[in-house]
Length: 123
Image (cartoon, rainbow, N blue to C red; front, side):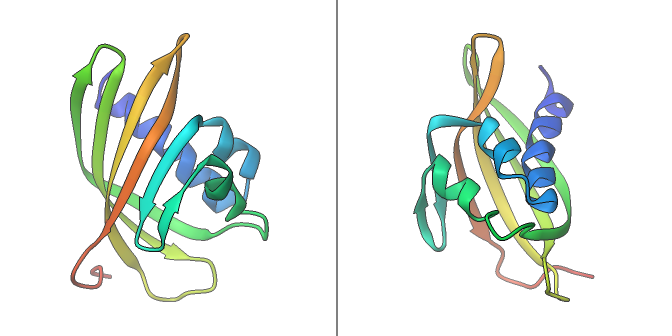
């Protein structure tokens, strides 16, 4: 797969956040998924649990994407996410790195780390 294919997978995660679809979110994450965020560590269940009250993201866009092959069936996707949380007027931005791994013909997200930007996102 090429960059566009992994961006499509990553957008499916973001679309699950917009739709409030915990099942769709969890389906894209490996059982042993590890998320590293400013709030701390998260596993697969914790990542999906943020959607128990419904959507967490109102809208988003991904830019500046880069893809790095880490070995057979494993890649790192890095990008800038600009998004607005549900109920918030102000946009936020963060750099995201996600490791995707192919398992039995299916690509799953095994690791994700967010890094907040120093300045607010341009509107």
